[in-house]
Length: 367
Picture 1: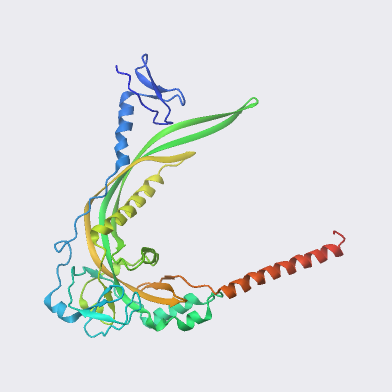
Picture 2: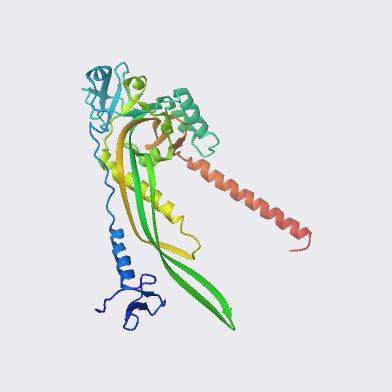
């Protein structure tokens, strides 16, 4: 038999072929492998070269189709001359300010929807409720500049339907783990450590429904992911009537461009599920993984978000609120003067406490 060169699947040390047993034995961890064992293991190397999931293409046949002529009659579209944002709205709304950059000049253009949304989640929070949530968000922020609240144009908070791609699939994952179990015991004056090496295979399936991926480049993904989740049981078939009184953003991030982010969510979820089944070992590491998806489907939905973009000392600050649940995220400026006063106050309080403690110790004769 040909002497094939392999590394130990357990500890990666070189294997030596034994003429006596016709197997390969590791001189480091003493594990022994048949040729079939090694072929099975090295066949799994393909798992390390995993391919992207095979998502379907989103087009008119997979979605709700093109806009009807009657729907186009009820809608208008404006393009921001500053940032290029394209906003869809009810024809009765006179848009005067860009949601994203605050530019006050929006140029009307001929409505040209690419894909008609399949679904929409209606707004549950109105503007007054959004303003209240925002004010509550700022309450108790002692380092917040006073002029920020006075000048941040809170009345400009805008309700906009943000485009999302919703991915559905049945995903299967296969993972190979290298695991160790280390035990130690005393033998006379020596501490003996024994290490067992294991190769573990796991496979499983998860059905995914409505994995959201933001379809707007203008909105930071971390903001949109932070205001999740949305309750998708409240998805309604789209009709332009839901746009009455609100804006809608046109997607500029296609379903195909969003697939890697959907892939990542699928892989992470399947990986976590399978990893949780491997327990009782001192250490576990993934040596190979592969994922496939079938019954893939993509839908296009508009989800409700309240947005406020404001400036403070030439720096932009963005706030986003889930228009269905009220969950709000955003960043706030810090008043440097108040910050240093706060630090000084902490320092003085600490010094006073130390001085008082020292006085007590002197009275007690300790120092």
